[in-house]
Image (cartoon, rainbow, N blue to C red; front, top):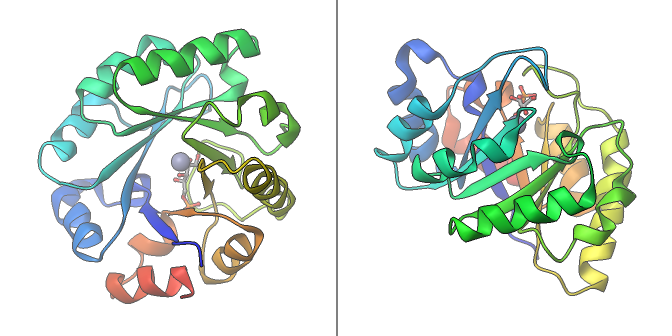
Amino acid sequence: MRKILIAPSLLASNFLKLEVEVKRMVEGKADFLHYDIMDGHFVPNLSFGIPVVQAITSAFRIVHDVHLMISNPSEYFEAFAKAGANIITFHFEAAKDVKTIKSWIKQIHKLGVKAGISIKPKTKVEVLKPLLGMVDLILVMSVEPGFGGQTFMPSAIAKIKWLRHQLDAGHLHTLLEVDGGINLETSKRCIDAGVDILVAGSYLFNQVNVVKAIQDLKHE
Ligand code: DX5
Ligand code: ZN
């Protein structure tokens, strides 16, 4: 039985009381904290940056999962590593070729941090085949990146199934993460398809009983 991990997306938190919101998730037994970094260029939205990540990582012991939705990610790997990121995930679509992607993965590993790669809904999953054994995490977007509170795109299920098959066939321990529109119903479909990590924003931050909500999302 695969262990399911839950990563609340801080984009959905009430920024007026960020410490309280993070504490709610950590005490609610979240496994990771998910940081959505947006540059207003790679995606049509601006979120938050390094000072916010630094403030939270210095105060909370948990896995810090940084999702870079920016056009020039390699210019910020070192700064996010120094800010306490444990996983740095960049987008396949931000790189001009696979050679560049391989050098970015090496760059992140040199910083002593885990490397992740993400694909947008319109990107074919097969593009990841040459990279499967090199990354620590693969993030399948189940919404068009840029905003929280969107509806889950079912096309993500086939991608998760294909990746799960490839990873198991290759005896690879790469973690499989899904992000966007995750709730009780869509989490079950993603778990059945073979996912390891569920990112959830609006669903979790709108809950009163976070402990129960996180437990329910795992369908254990
Ligand atoms: C969207 C972000 C997601 C988003 C998830 O671009 O990458 O992490 O915040 O929020 P929900 O769960 O509300 O779709
Ligand atoms: Zn995200």
